[in-house]
Amino acid sequence: MQSWAEEELEDTGLPDQRLNRRLIKIVEQALAQPCVTIPQASENWTDTKATYDFWKSERFEYGDIIEGHRQKTLQRSEKEELVGSASVKCGNGNMNIVP
Image 1: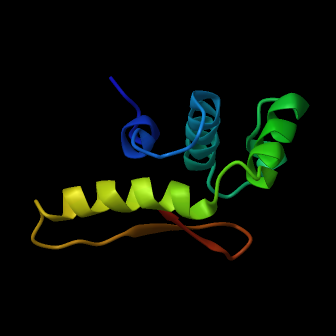
Image 2 (image 1 turned 90 degrees about the vertical axis):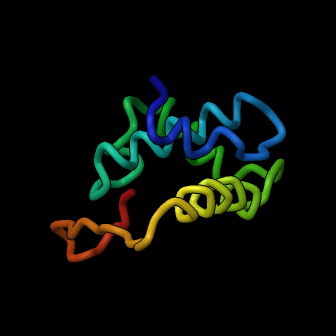
Image 3 (image 1 turned 30 degrees about the vertical axis):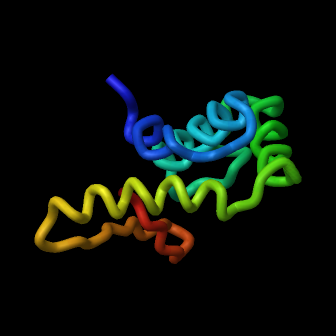
């Protein structure tokens, strides 16, 4: 069974499957611990560096990620009467939106 991140991001148009896998891992880590920093969510320093390198990459634009997510959201919303979102209040006072 696919995780939410795998299903949600399977149609993301990144230029390389390694980037797709990294994106899914980043999202899964953020969902598992939405109130922590990237280093805290990462398994180790290599994982932390890979996350920062991913976001610094010039091989794709943020819109490439958003478009795949937007398409999945539209597909789901067509089946629903009411569309909403949820959020988590973190100890630092920030609100993080979660699926």
